[in-house]
Image (cartoon, rainbow, N blue to C red):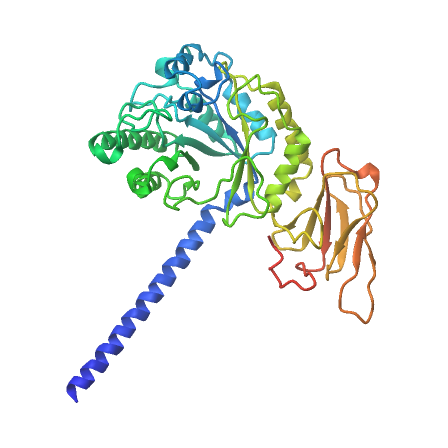
Length: 454
């Protein structure tokens, strides 16, 4: 009887411990999710960031790092561009002013691309703009200092995990390697020590809000020591945000590149990085620019699916932003300033069947914003809207609209079709935005509450 009691007591005790463990796990998970949501709040509101690819590749206007890695030209010829990087017309204050004017809420600049040339005066080695070029100075710090002065912008820094110039990094070009990592862990250890030293410099000197990693595909999370990297960065700033290109599924947000996702990515937070022409860095022969209208449509496409756009510029070796890129940023500024109420505090919109176009909602889901990148032929239509529209207007213009409901039958619970006529004088030259104030959180026929968001 005593043994039976002991077994019963042990079983109850084990159950209690298991329940306690599950409860602790659930509480920790909830705390982690809450902390993540808090630190990602600014990123979710930002909508627009400006990417800057600047390095010695701007001297000849060729592909950054890849041009030698893919053996389009010899490594020595690529690195000879060090002799032409002057930054003589570089004005970081003007750069920041232009980025602010675009309506961006953060900016990300390359501190070091895969070629290993650092834009700051790194003490980890001597391959930097400060030590190896006619510019003869740190060009990263003045820009970061100006960004830090901004009340509008968050600080983002791009860092390549790959360093094809470092003598102890295993890979070099697509056909040449220095060694196999698994066969010389001592050399790999030397490289990793160097990498951590550079990341430590960036963390302590600049305390960035965001680190944009690249190149993680060349090694495993264990070889990079991805967890160690995050520990290093979070020692300086526990709320630092990192992108998904640090290996091991440890990043805070996804980074699709160039092509707009057809459907919303699975990531809770994501950002499309996009060039204005077909090049990341300065390439004056690349004149294949997208129009401001096309880029604005892409921007709207991103934030109405709950993501951000990270739009790239590529300054020359002298530090001049090309005129075409300046104009695009100014065009963005015109549109974002006019329509800010329908950009920064929105969340993803309703499915495409009720409204066949870009749309978003206010955070409380009581205002539906419609983005119309064309001159409508007739009225704009919404189907399945159960709410009453209390008021409607053209954002940034103030013109009040009078939506009309047709095809509503008194005996049928299905809502009618809502038609909105927009006078030509109220149309924006790029994308017109219409706001519909609803009588409560949006309700769509046949769609569960809150299930409408993309």
